[in-house]
Image (tube, rainbow, N blue to C red):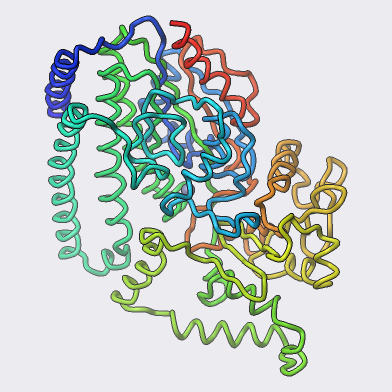
Length: 545
Ligand SMILES: [Zn+2]
């Protein structure tokens, strides 16, 4: 950390030189500045667990020693980063039903990690609105929020917009240091992994390589880069900064939201926040306000593949529920028997794989998105199915508008009810002329306080119902929206992950905002839309100044 300070000091000198050479003014001192730190995927419940177990000592100190307040927040549906950030950054109600979905009007998928998709969505849905990070920086976010400097967003991943050679030199010092530090720490992680492998090969092989890959990629490189880049912005007096630390979310997806590796990732993020707060205190004249918040939580879940012998959800759904009627007549196989045979065949193909096979499986399941290929979408006879997490979408492509359940019933009379009883399926959402319908184990519910369906007994029932109404009002949500939450087998994700989000479980829905003393946030935050006016006020103040 001392070396970090040295490098930042050097970089600060270059910044001053840059200003002198260009005769630009130093940053204004007549306004409060905004630093938002998002801990991706951290529910309030796990934050509290982390605080109790000493995994978030700095956040704990902010709340218990420095007068920061922890505001409970519910994030609406779907519980997913792009929907949250669209609402919080621009104050618009998003049409973003998941991390991966289909837009029937544009006849194309939206898959956020793919090049250009986030930029398209941002341009279309935020049209004309002022983002809360205008004139500032965002790191690790899905959208730019109007930021000028957003080198590492999904939206700008391939088109960095930082301007000017001198500025680049200043940034280069930070990057060079991240590079040196990252290489050193990568080497040390690899050596340690190698030593562990020599000491205890059996345990090490069982742990798999995914963990090492994530630790080096996300925790060594990305977090260091973000922390140093934000530190540099703080020294420079950048008016608004939004940084999203992905560490906890990534580890929780891979190992579960309360797993010790996920909690350790939280610990590392906590350390980075402490480092940022320390830099903030060195430049009191810039009057930064620090907010720490989370966009959604995660639910512990079972991957769908383990229930059906490794088959991807979309393929399995087609085979079980969408086979044309004439095929049923030709081969009247009992569905349960057929399912079992499929299961056994798939099991033979995938079970007990050796270490090489495991590695190839990781490549198959984790790498397509790096290559820009949307995974887990399948289309047959005008029906497109997309698995996006604990949620999946079924689209009938011949109608541009969402298809109501009455129309789906006319086409395939038993489909909706059969689906809701399928393996690994919690409930199915669809639209009717009178509003959304929830189909739960073969019964249809109108969803109201008097007809809560699967959500009976929830003390946050009104929030759940509002969230589902919002979700099914999105034109891009599937004609059928399938959730694995509360399936007979427990929570199920349609991707190969043991932590998942997008659904309405309490852990996914309820998060927090840690706000500085004196910040006047709404007393009850039930949707990220309510954050927008508060954060946008920092922009207003800057214009007034
Ligand atoms: Zn996530």
